[in-house]
Length: 40
Image 1: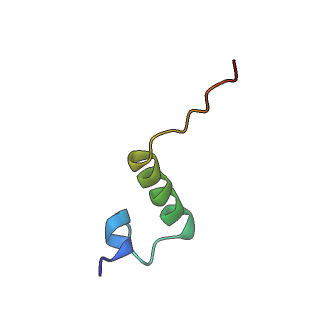
Image 2: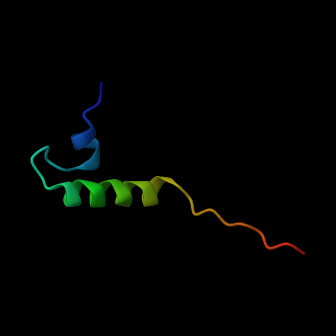
């Protein structure tokens, strides 16, 4: 099984804020923005 800390590029001993920031950066990288079309 993959180590989630390694995937995020952080240490298990890093602060919660740093881990959350790394997670959010990864989400931005792999998930395209959602564009909701306007009603005509």
